[in-house]
Length: 108
Length: 286
Image (cartoon, rainbow over all chains, first blue to last red; front, side, top):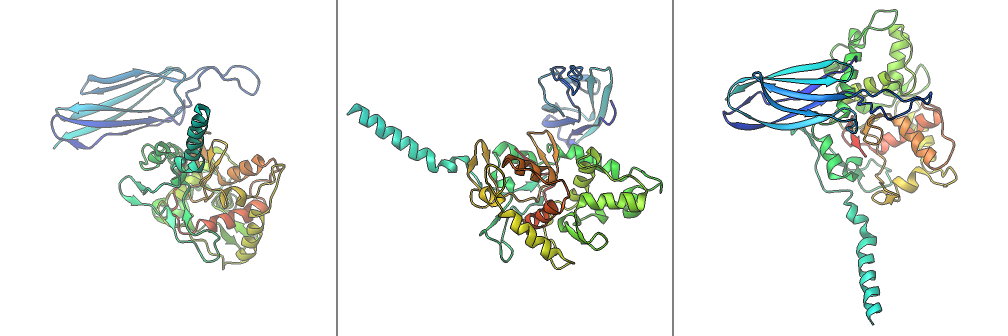
């Protein structure tokens, strides 16, 4: 889909061992597949079905999303940071698209 | 005897509930600070001739959860559309090969505080003009592009982006320009005119009953400093004229067209009623 841009908020730096809060938001219609269009036919389902977050290649957090989740899903979670590195975020769309973004974090 | 006690207990419970618009908690005593930096004015002294003692932002009438959403521009869902507006600002459109940025440069500088002074007097069309109409004027006269249709995605996003550059700036419109005063007079008259099968005026709800409930909805003073506003009900930005029409429809009256003389007069008047409040665009409401 066009025009889909993930947004992520990660602190620029943290002390070693600190638990930080990560906020993510993506603009997506999360079409449930249960609604009917103006022509009376069902609008096909198209949702983000999975979200993952990795840190230096290791999984940190992932979740599956279901049709009941509303448009523009906002996901917030915590992570413990022990070393400097890169968080990699990805959102998987029903149509096969993958939206990705990365954020670096330094150790104070 | 026992029945009497129960009746009495019920009466006590009732008195606890009835003045209990208070349990709605609004308007609350809270301060709006956005991103921990921008101190917003949500309570202001009224301009001369204002019927209320204090001008209050609709933010004060919302639940804790809704208010929280507005304190962080990251969590504010309206910011997605503002971001969309930022992209449109830099997108070339029309036969002149220009974008907004071609003339106005960086919106963060050129548009700072601008949204807080609309609607303004437009000499050419001899009527007040709001941000939506100003954008359309630029598009048709400068860019050689088509005017956006009312409530087009682009219109809401770009309007919100322009107004967002005034985040925190107090609303101050100039009634001395052109014939703004006569449009204010007309808006004032419309504000107090009862319409529809329910026979309600704007004042019936927003002046006489703000702080009370209308069914499940908690009435505010109806100030417009946060428009276009992100409404959780629609899960997208809602323009001011859409909201005007929604309110008038709810009185079961026929509603005027967007940007019609009636609604422009109402915009002038209602914007003036919110004088001194910070622009909150995109505000988050129920």
